[in-house]
Length: 303
Image 1 (cartoon, rainbow, N blue to C red):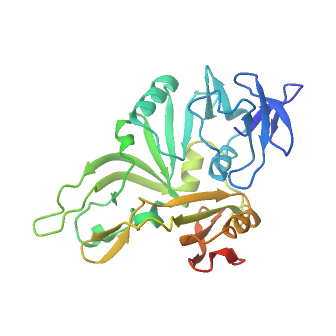
Image 2: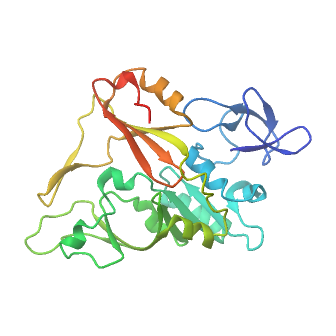
């Protein structure tokens, strides 16, 4: 969590070597200001009093900062809602890591009025999940995307699901499993068609009544991402209609950092197969700094 209570019960953000108390359980928390995830508060006893909590990243912080401070990490019974509007009590649940169907149903039943916002910034990079190749082949109607490795757990969702693609946000309207593209065409293993409506990120922010991105924020770097495959594991290759061979998400590892200096320190610890270093910008785009394998210990190029 990014917010805790000081001795006067005022809301404070994490700073190095500080202690406070959890707004939910009122037990002591310690500031965690390390080099991988964004600065946050953690319980002294370990774990989290909210079992639904996940490790906070710059992506979580960025979206929470779109809302007024009083809307962030709102205590709702035994849980903390990421963003909760006070007038209509709608919860915006930010989800970065995978989640089970059981937990999806549990959260929806608990919060009632809520929507899901899933971190999908790297989906286009992973397997070109959202592109127009199927449209060029005449296989998909307008407003429909191909998604090779979907988070199938969200088939259980009954509330609105949005994917943050960086510069745009896609509302998922439905899934359709692909069993065969057409007679004579190759099978698309584990494939789904995703039906949805794509709007600009700014339009989504306006509809959600969140704070717009200021002009001076757009050129700033929000966070840095390292993406690699463990050297000991053979990357999985999947043929796609004979156009090219494409590696899917299985085997990918990622870490997100607050600054380029911390990313450099991490990258200098040793070589990693197919290391890619990325910069996440305030305009929503993800820019690749450099691809590296043999000389990854030199760290990312400045830029």
